[in-house]
Length: 445
Ligand code: GBH
Image 1 (cartoon, rainbow, N blue to C red):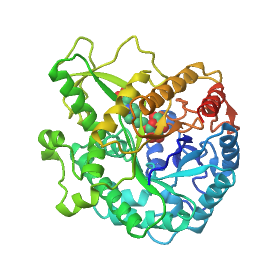
Image 2 (image 1 turned 180 degrees about the vertical axis):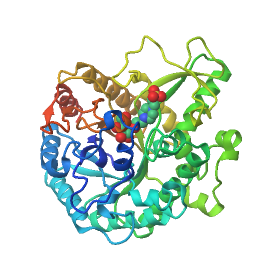
Image 3 (image 1 turned 120 degrees about the vertical axis):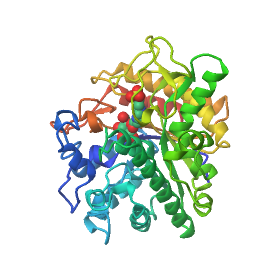
């Protein structure tokens, strides 16, 4: 099933770019409500306008074409398809994505579609407890079926979930993302239902014989052992396993990682034998979102980060950030070799399964974004080295992001785009890195 051609791409997500929140019959989502809750999002910014891609999507397609990408990763807003999360498909929502998909294909760009990038229909949260309620599994499968039936003739690359780690841990564990809950139990419960929704969606996809490939996108930093002591090596392994293995072991091996069951199993729901069988090998590829690296040790070291006092501490490790490392606008460290090591780790643990880097990039200021030019160049070098020297099965690379957009709790202050854009001025202005990325693509093709 895996394709041979390396896909060069750029990525976005519906809530972060579309705007038009009250148009085309779209219902409200949990982020619309979260943005209106004081103290949640910087400057109380919201997604009402964002990049206005709901109206200006043809400009996005044109810029993608000039960039020379093979593929565009975008997400479908569930509340455009089913305004309340259940029932008949909304024809205007279907029409919007039909137009986008057709425009991409006419321009030779492969659509790579995420079904869920965090914009849960609000009604499902308020009246049904969102990802905490097992009933969401069937609801998600119904939504996915509408998408497969309407777009599957042209879309051959599907991602069920973007970063279920963020949905669970940030949404239900620490509360820094919508719906803003703070409970370990809820985070593990949400994770469980996300994984089951993934498994039943893939079951449907395969049983109904839709044409194409389907996977999940998971995120993690690389965790480098602080020293070569056995304890630190194990701590680093444990940290990556808690982040990435939490959602990747189940979809490849059929269950949560052993180390999680041993340490936090009392807080986690368990899969039945039937669910395990369904989860096992429920991906054709793994999507990886990767941004940064930290050192990890088993015992505290001078200058290490404070513990968080919440679910973040569950891996029971200490993190240390090298002060010498360059930092992005988010404060995240620029460490390209971390991606190289992570790709090798994933390839080894998951039997050389195909990997798409579905997001990589950085926040930095300005149009003359030399920092981003270096960032992309070096992270792409690290990617191609893993593929060519270490035979890791990397099948594509998507830059995050095509546009400056709504950066969740940070609002519009953090800019990840290779093209400038803001709600105040939605004209698109390519940055220096847009041209650098264009050159990288044309050179490596
Ligand atoms: C992705 O999430 C999202 O998919 C995307 O929508 C978003 O715009 C993009 O990244 C940029 O943020 O605070 O040093 O401990 C990012 C997932 C998870 C990456 C937490 C950073 C913690 C770094 N993030 N991780 S740190």
